[in-house]
Amino acid sequence: MQMNHQEHTRLFIPFDRWLSAAPYGDGHINDTFRVEVEHGGAVKAYLLQRINRHVFRNPERLMRNMQTVCEWLAEQEGYTYRVAAPLAGPDGRVLHTDDAG
Picture 1 (tube, rainbow, N blue to C red):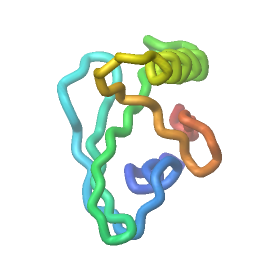
Picture 2 (spheres, rainbow, N blue to C red):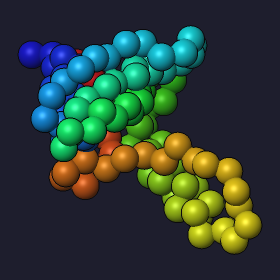
Picture 3 (spheres, one colour):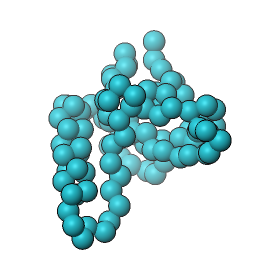
Picture 4 (cartoon, rainbow, N blue to C red):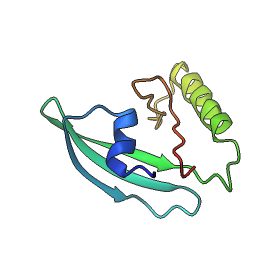
C-alpha cells in the first residue's frame, strides 16, 4: 500500500497538525513537495523530495554523499552560504523507501 504525503512527512518530521503539501519547483528529475505542519504551536515549512530511482539507482549512496558534503561545509570557517541539509527522522534515517519504491 502506497503512503500519502502526510504519512511520509511523519517519517521525518514530528507534527501536531497537518496543514498542506504542494508540488514545489519544476525539477525534471525528482519530485519535490513543500509541506506545512504545525508543531508546538508554530507553523513550519519543509521540503520533501521523492528521488527518481531511474536516474539515481542507489539513493542510499546519494544521501550518504549529500550528508558528507553538508557536514563538511558546516565545518568550514567563513562559509557563509546556507545549505539545505538532509533532515533525519526520529529513527535517524534520511531516506525511506515505501512499497512503491
